[in-house]
Length: 262
Image 1 (cartoon, rainbow, N blue to C red):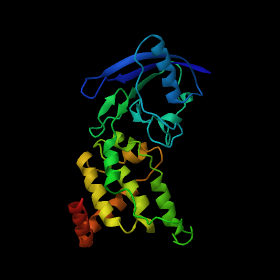
Image 2: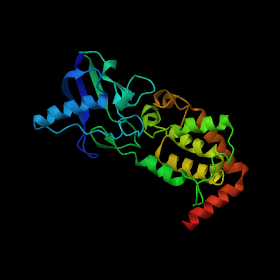
Image 3: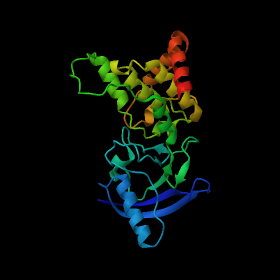
Image 4: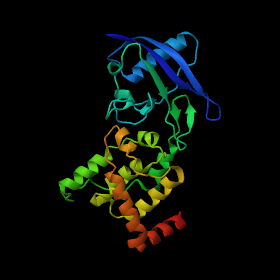
């Protein structure tokens, strides 16, 4: 079945240029198309009319990379739970419907053009400590370092974060706690992440606070997360941050030394 839709799309030529909504008709859209495929069809028709296509981020189109995030009818990635924009199919809409499409609305994600935003702030958090120190050489046996299943499951769930930014876009405070906490949890829970656990936590949380608002437990981040990451990871992050700051002064000293050396 095909759909006829009306799109209200945010258009903005650049970060320093005011933007506004423009209305487009999306006709004969196959209900089995993804949302991004629908935008492709609209763009092809715009280009055929010698008009500038709508700019939007995308890459894998498999719900893995986190590039495709937009706000659809006021909700990051749309109304379907646990679904990225690229995996949202048009059968979730009704013919004749008007769909509003916007970029992430957050001060930490400035608009580059149309639906494309700058998520460099996330990159800076990862650069601050989202890694482990590992010796080079041959791979170690998988069973050499034992990890309890419950811990492995928690780490795996946290590692599902794709860094799309829906948590920030959904939060009334524009907070980045869910993203940062997920990236910390999947390293801090595992034995391989222990050597830098405390310095990593301080570095990543302090960097996060430079760009994002504060968490006040609205839990909108959890509701909007396409991977269903629980806000429990934020509690773990807060606990580790307090311990790093007040219960293990060596971590603070080590962090200060590394910063001085850098």
